[in-house]
Image: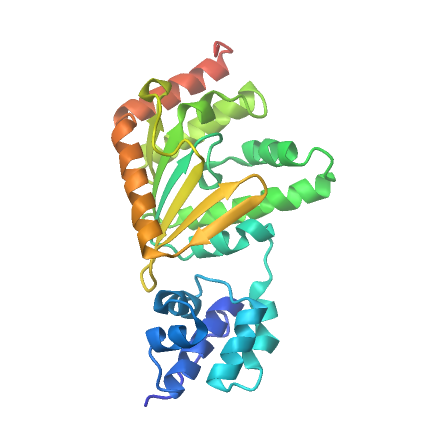
Length: 279
């Protein structure tokens, strides 16, 4: 059996922990499915831990140490891998997002994080917590802008966003902030850095009226889906659930305006905000 590969010290703690899990599993001669069966989880979940797209929780780390006989290694080190600048309910999704090759997102009430400007992000975070100190808001906005830097790559990840018309018409941060935010969204679409579609009010009732949706695909791990509510979030890897919500997104795309018509609407609303003509 091949020995452990050299680990890149510049990698994230989660990536290093995932690599060590793979080596420990292979030393035991177990497949991902076999290890998953012993721990009452799916083989795909083990694969996501090894790829660094899922967070290793302390209870699960203890089980791994016991099954793989690693002398407490995972228990001692899972804490470093769990540290995050993001809220607890979103941290795992944000870190998975950074490794995704494709992201498909439906946003019903606000412009999604990866498409936001700093001023818009500030207005959203201030609305989330009106009593937070300004330094805290600064940290949250900085974290949001760090996430957005993954779009600096010209093609990866592929980003496909369906925005509800309500997100474009809800005046968040004032007209100037909204004008800048919509011009930014339009710019990403014009540069072919994101596929943007608008789900218009005229579409009526639709399949995702219950809330936001984010689908993520990876090069070396099964897909994930993230759903979010007020102060809560859930990351799912169940294949049936992922397939169902991928179908939900496909139906949204079918009900939305075409990318060309969506761009025209976004730019028209940006002009309305600029000239204070937005109803």
